[in-house]
Image (tube, rainbow, N blue to C red; front, side, top):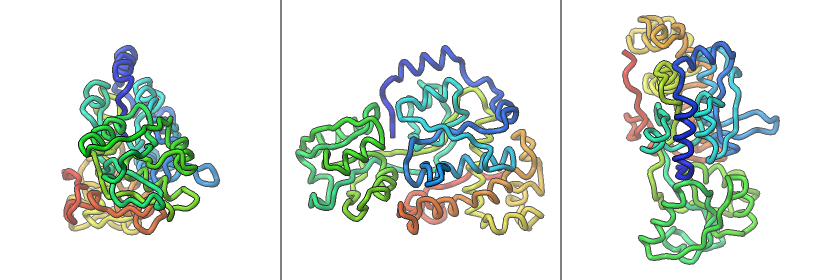
Amino acid sequence: MKTTVFLGALTAAVIAGGLASAQTLDDVKARGKINCGVTEGTLGFSARDSEGKHQGFDVEFCRALGAAIFNDTDAVEYIELSSKNRFTALSAGQVDLLYRTTTWTFSRDVDLKTSFVGINYYDGQGFMVPTALGVSSAKELDGATVCIETGTTTELNLADFFRVNGMSYTPLPVGGTTEAKALFEEGACDVYTTDASALAGVRASLKDPNGYQILPEIVSKEPLGPTVRHGDNQWEDVVRWTQNALVAAEELGVTSANVAELAKGTDNPEINRMLGSEGSLGAMLGLDADWAARAIAATGNYGEIFERTIGENTPIGLARGLNALWTQGGLQYSPPFR
């Protein structure tokens, strides 16, 4: 979801507070944990379970970083942030990075002085309606009341879609996912619109998921991924290449079950470099040789994470789609470990 408000204020905050001090990894090591910014509660991506523990797709990438740096997936502090305050928290140093269903855009990358270091989920804005509404397409929503989170470009995408299709609507502004879910479920709005993956999570958490459907239209590009502050290339590299390792591991057939054996050495030089039995990639990052092997052992590769947290056999029920490997018709692709 893409925030449009407060860009000027956030830019001023970044300038006032300075860019990253080029020592985030040292600060993280001294602190003994990573401060990872996540959502306030999006089932499948980051939400608390019945014991209050954070679970989900984005959470797994934070856990992988904990394993890579500390050999401890619990060396992570999860800080829940709204769409409005996430960039302020990042620029102020409250968190070391965002893994928070955050869309990579020009203004965020350039104006807010943040660095997006990869895409862990290719998404787009969608629409969810009660099945009882009797529609099968977003083009049938003329006159609908739409729950929409304020301060996001979801509002702009919605306005554009209805205008292009010659339809009218009544917006019902909401402050966040929790409020939107409650109002939508009680029937205060006919439609809830946000990232399609988030809609799948909300739908799975409703009292009667089968009473709701996500319509087929996708009306925007929402490349979601981790972001850090400008100015600290080493920390960018650690976050970027830990995510790349999880993607490359799937492509190379490295799993949580076989990584320990493969880390001893194989006939594939790229696997050896990534897992540390050859070369010095870990030292280049400021980590030890086993950083990637630990991350993969802790969380599994990208495909294992996807299927376990949001895949078709989970309540979220998402197909790989664009998030399949490039070798399988998708967009997930890691640069070489060389």
